[in-house]
Image 1 (cartoon, rainbow, N blue to C red):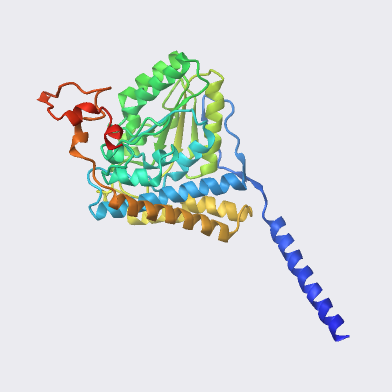
Image 2 (image 1 turned 45 degrees about the horizontal axis):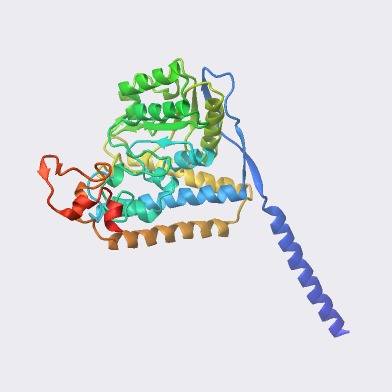
Length: 396
């Protein structure tokens, strides 16, 4: 009798555990839908849907990308303060939803060109964290072997990283022209900040794109401040999505990665239909100063920054969405965060030990094929330098 009761108790316990496991499995769904903030439209009768759906695999992938970029930028901040990084260094922390949402929507063959705040874009374009951080430290295994630094990184269909404010705007128009000329089904995403929105070349580039119906999406990442100047003090009109005038535009909550993804998808369909260019404004915020040398508190208060971090952090918002919709467990997200942290920590250690490039590399990557006998008025006698046009060839 006792044995029978014991067996029955064990069976009941096993069934209870199995039932609990089934309930937990059912409780975590494979996809979920969310509502975004309304999109503001200019010269459009309809825009992106505010009802967005995402599956678990994509959600965890995008969350990892955002975590890697955030931790990579935090590491860059520390490396700069340790004087391991010299020169300019512009961090992307706070704006991760813009780049990650954009890359989640675009085709691999859609070109992207942006400003000097480019670390996150470079990573999403296919660079490893090691390549990004080694470049920041001016080391040989950096993206361009330490020659470009913070502002000049490149990848497949990623045209930089441009150091001059607004310089990428006409270049983006040129890339879009090449796409149409070569009958490619792609579009060029051309990004710039609110500070560059007042550059004259933007109007010239937009005019040409509209005349020739070029597939160019001009995206203003409005983080509220151009260096240390609030947008309202530098711009007579701060509705940057309307700046195209005759070109349609969309305002997007740039702190919501799903809203960004939906807007980028809409832009791709719009341009693919041959309607020409589009203006998009991502309303976002940078957590650090304009550059690492800028504390970012002389033109805005610490309380303002802390309030945005508390209420609108794109990582925290996306994490809460995932958990609320039961797309993943807290342990799964902790695992993603740990993997991102480990990847960045490993890259920091690698970059610190990576050697500086040889001085011979100063005259490589300048001319196609073999460099001429004289470079900028100086005769080159070293046959080794004469043999190489690319730093990569010299290193191998």
